[in-house]
Structures are given as C-alpha cells and as structure tokens.
Length: 572
Image 1 (cartoon, one colour):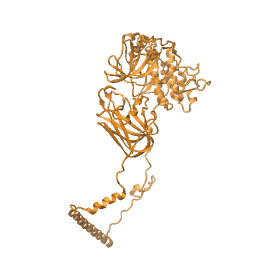
Image 2 (cartoon, helix red, strand yellow):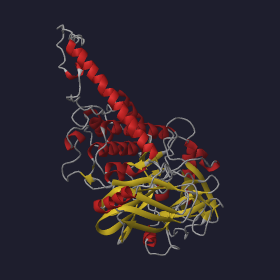
Image 3 (cartoon, one colour):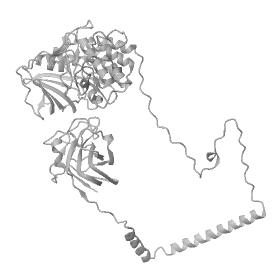
C-alpha cells in the first residue's frame, strides 16, 4: 500500500564497492510479499527538505479496476500528492496484494523514481519493504512494492503509549542495523519517520520507503548518514517518551515544550531506561551535548550499531503467571487432608483402627442390618415387576397432571420480537475500511442490495490479510438481544460470524474491549442464524466476519475469498 514515509537515493559510496545506484538502470525486481499502510505523514523534516517542485505534471487520472501490464488491478487510491498517486492493488498473476506508486512519464522526478526503485530492489534486504517491479509503460511510470497486512506502523503503536523497554531496544537495534547495511550500499532514507517503521505480527521490525519516496518528493541531503542517524534517535526518543523530540507536534505526537531545548528522555518521563535514554541523545543533533554523560555522539548508523552492541543486553520481560487459588478445606474432607499440617521434626502418632464388632451387641447389629438389606431387595423386586406389568397401559391421569403442571409453571416458549435497526457503521480497527457507504443496504429490506468486502487471495480465514471485517449496528436504545439472522450473497465453504456487544459505533475500538454475545458460527449457505445462550442487553451490536468463502469474478469484484451481507435482522 502507499507508504507514510519517504526515502532518498544516496549515491555516496561508503563501502568502496560499486554502489547499487550504479546498477539501477539495468535491473528490475519482482518477488512475493505483502504490505499495507496509508500515507498520512506530515511534512515535518528532519534535517532535509524537498528541493524540487512537482512541475506541471498532474497525477494520472486512473480509477479502481484499471489494470497495469494486464496484471496489477488497482483497487483503492490511498495517496494523491505532488503529481503522483499511490494505490492498493491486486497482482492477479500471483494472487497477492501489492502497493503501486504511479506518476506520468513526463513528471520531472520520473527518472529519479525509476532509478531509486531499481536501486532499492537490488539491495534485497528482508528488513526493508521490497520493491517488486519498476516500469515505464504507456506514458506512465509505476513502482510496485510489498504489502504487509500483518504489520502495524510505529505511529499506531505509539498512539496507546510508549513502547515497553525491550520493544524499544529491539526496534532501535533492528532499524539501526538495517540502515547501516543500506548505507554500505550507497542508499539512504532521509525521512525515517514513525510511519516508515513497521512491526510485523512475529515481532520483526521493517522499514519502508527506502530510495523510492524521497525520489517521489524530491528530498535530498548533503549529510545523508547524519540525517538518518538523527532520525533513528528521534524514533527511539518517541518510543521511550511518546513525545516528538522537537518543539513542533508531528506524526500524532506532542512536541517538547517551547524554549526548553532538547532534554533527555528520562527527564521527560519517569521510569525510562537510562541506557536507551543516553543512546537517543547520542544519536540526536544536540549542539554537542549528549545528556549527562560524555560519550561521543553517533553520526552514522554504523556508529549507532556499535553503541548498541556495547550496551548491556535488555532481556524480554518474564511471562506473568496467575497464582492458583488458595486451597480451601471443607468439612467433607477426611484423613490428613482435613487436618492441620504437622510441624517439621515432630513425629505424629498413628490413629488406632476401631475395634471389630465382636460383642453380643455387635452381633445383633450385624443381623439387623442383614435383615434390612433383604427386605429392601424384596421391595425393589416387587416394584420393578409392577412397573413392567403396567408399562403398556395408557396413563391419562399422568398426562393430565403434566399438562396442568406446565400451564401453572409457565414454561411455555417465550416468543421473540424483532428489533429495529436505527443506524449502522462499518467497523475497521486497522484503519482500512471496505465499503462504508454501503452499510445501510444491509437493513433496507431489499435482499438484492448488499454491503460487500474486498476479495482476498487467501482463505477462507481472512487472517493474516485481515483479522476480520464487520458492521456495528445501532438499535436506538438498549435492547435485550437473543438472536440474529444474516443474509449472505455468496455461498460456499465457509462463512464464519460472531456477534459482539459494543459500547459505541466507533470503528477504532479494539474488539477485545467488547463482550461476545455468541459465535463464532459458520455456514456454507446464504443464511446464517445465531442464537445467544441468554439474552444480552446492549444498544450497539457488531457483526464480525472472520472467514469468507471463495467466489468467482462478478461485476463488482474479482475472484477471491469474499462475502457480502444482504439482510440483517435482530430479535430479542
């Protein structure tokens, strides 16, 4: 998908070998990968800025469904800026999602974009979002890159608070190592922002925008290594404090108070790791000052990697285990379990067994017990025989009594009543909606209209492309909900749906904050009915789809794993 950050081409040769940019015009790359994020970065610069204007070129007038090279089908435009546009697309040949940057061939930066994309593709480092293709065709220049559906950018992670110490350590270690490798091959980033750093579901950190987005925006720097090093320091500062280390707010983070200058992270927030605080200050441009100690500043990613290696390793936190409940002794327990534990070193006397029944009284008691057992066996045999003899006779009295008892106790099935839907909104906690303008079609009473998902390459379980897709319904007021009926447009194996009680119609509320009503329930047909074990009182109900069947191409979408909701009805 389109990337929030930009990257620049650094033609400096730091390794003594021929830099990758020298080979850029001879090679393109194609591979298999995935990435998806939106471009919402501000233009807050970190020691560099754009020097080249967009010229007179305008972004290509393309639309969803347009196909590049009879292979890449454009699905959603996520960025339109400076004469270029960025799209989420589908590689129909390999059946995978990809991101595409598009600009006119006569754009003043078209040549540099192609060279930057091919240079980045030659690096082939898995710590970077990979460039898959770079082509000039039909008066268009387009760059195809990975799409990572399981990745979360640092901007989103910091929205909920600073990173845990070990996470911040892993982030700066992996990012610094990746940028050091890139600079050894003559490539720089120059706009390494929180939106350019992604954490995958496996905990790995990846960088996007290397050598491509800077070319798109015309960003350059006379000191590329120092610029990228300072950017890594700013990322670490933000990870430790949830603050941007400059006076201006940026990337959803508040800046430092005006007039106080750059202060160390451990002076901004209590509990910050001292070693990481010092490291951030050594990487940031600070007029020669590096916090309270006197370590030399880090001016290149290589020096930053060395400084990290000299730090004591920060270990991950120990997993938290819930202590079992305290053992409760009851009056039914006997033997040693019901007694107080003996003190160490004290010998406990063994209890003597009770004497056997050897007296006259004991003998009489044994005969009495035997007689009672014989009588009980005889009575039981007589009752069994009587029941077998009368099992074929109708028992009208019993039937009448049963009917009367049911009427008196009121155990009749309580009829359900329909609940009217007042409003609805698409739910997309990952920030990537499907078709939010169509949700009203799911309760308009017309089974020929529907809200649909996008088509996904893998399935029927939507993860890792999406954790799920859904719609939050407003019942107008708190209702007692017990069942739901959901009409589906596509049949096949398989559709899985759950119902959740939500606090609002917010599309960003985490699903973990909601109460599950029922599910997951699956079907292979076009109608799914869900029933709760007991009615749940709620005003907002989330219909959450986590698996969808495979269906062929139609007039609205291509073949893939997808689903559409035609009618939703609730009852209570």
